[in-house]
Image 1 (cartoon, rainbow, N blue to C red):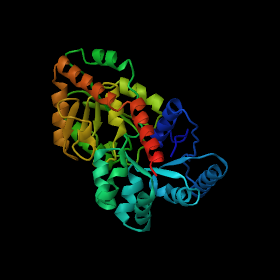
Image 2 (image 1 turned 90 degrees about the vertical axis):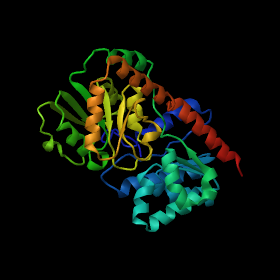
Image 3 (image 1 turned 120 degrees about the vertical axis):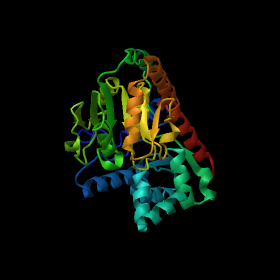
Length: 346
């Protein structure tokens, strides 16, 4: 997975990890990645051939694979034929989709996890999810690394201080970033916004998989649907918003966009589900709701709208403090240390 002009957000965290490793690591890194394509066969064939070419003709010590269900066989080739150290990064659908089908691909995934030298997962919640499948004896090889982390801008603090200084935020500017589908909770957002009695602006950034905006019929709400944008372009939407909405109904492996939002000083309303409570603390840097509960989302919107500037400011500062714990530099440095420890263990 790697971003392209056609899909600028596709696998962007892989690019972020690679770029930060390039800045941090003293050795040589070689990238083998596949960008999104509507054609399935040729991109995969080219990706597999490049992988085998690099193993054969480049000096490779360790193979670090994202998206387990597409790279497990390549990892096996690297491990058993080329005798390389292999580390898999398991980050969500690559594990959960085969698990739900419970077929051969899930069994291959479990086999790959058992032979690899290291296993990287994005959150403690996801770690707990896979442990019953792989067995407690494999727990020591698991390392939690939050998907490349986020960049916390030096301007975030000053931006936060000016963002909430007025007594009343009108209109309240809310931001939704991600796949636009009911699984990501866009229907929960619309249900809540249909009941607000004050002015709200909603900006939606992401690939539209389900267009249900015709059901948003409240004269107090204006909205715009932007579609997918590059990570650089996304910055402006964070900086122009007051509140980030993440009412997902899907068991996220992490959910990096809410942490990115917090790095810009945005408090988050998120689902009390999966790993979200690991970084959204109710009343500290945002609010938690039960998944799919539009009434609770409406209550949180009303509560935030009527907070004093100082209270909104506290939430914003706490959001930035939380994001600092997920700084990209720190996350990638820790990941590199883990990878080196995997290489040292025989």
